[in-house]
Length: 398
Image 1 (tube, rainbow, N blue to C red):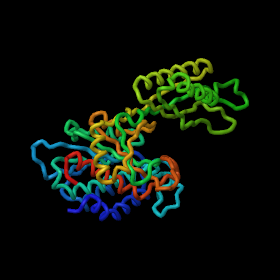
Image 2 (image 1 turned 180 degrees about the vertical axis):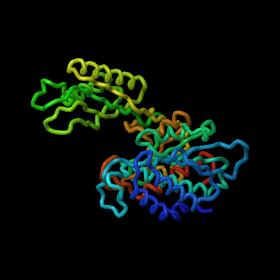
Image 3 (image 1 turned 180 degrees about the horizontal axis):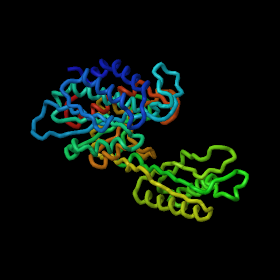
Image 4 (image 1 turned 120 degrees about the vertical axis):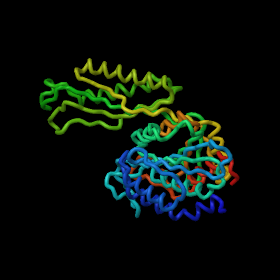
């Protein structure tokens, strides 16, 4: 039997083609119809003796049962990757650049999907050494915090069975071929925030006859930015960012409504609650003082991502075996990014694996940018880390 490294090398060319195909045809969250169909077709063509089912409209659940079982009720682990893209127009001169205007894989989910598919190929090759069952979650909708919940709410999936779950994500500040792991809380909890400001509009030449939501929005944003700087302890961590503001149609019409959208990132429930209460208080005060109606809404939430130390240890041993200790980095500080993988980690002992995606010596381009890129070496590093974790969990000699 080939080693993991040899087998990955043999299928690497196929996986690069898959990655390029996925990158060229990105789809937005919960609309990954072509992506799901492409993955299902590839599964039926290349992998034998697996169970496949749809989760919702675009999620895919795959079950691989090892044949080295020595007990009736075998352990189950989950390996998960996300598939959705972002509403960004790609600014890269690549032969496989996005062919869907205004949509781009600017967070590497095309790479994550390919890594999970490659990991399934590897583990199917080692099936007769695995004394358990592996579920593969090809998950939609991570960017809108809906995909993980679609799996968790599926009555056909028994979440009392899994004993561990591993997720994969590329890391732009880490060179391709390197892996980062972290014990405990590694990513923040997230809240999506929308604030609507309304008042009687009118002609720009007569603002005294209106209650201008544009100037109220500008004032409100400035006041809300003091919550983190003046109401949150500097020994705590929080981010409140407003990333979208819309209102008005012409230069001489004061609109009736302005809508602000943003994100809140925290590590503890106490800090989250305090900031939410402060947001509501400042909105009430601003509405009273400026005579406009202000309605804050907290739309979607994901918890902080908390990795189980014992499961992280298993992943660490696998990475050292396959990639070497020099390519393993242990994170010390959590990051303000969020992930709906945290919904799985709330229920099942977890590890979130960060696979380096920056070309060694190359320029770092952060997630959610039009120039985002991923180095080809990310595929190999991610597949070795994820498949190695599964085999190490089941105590397979590799």
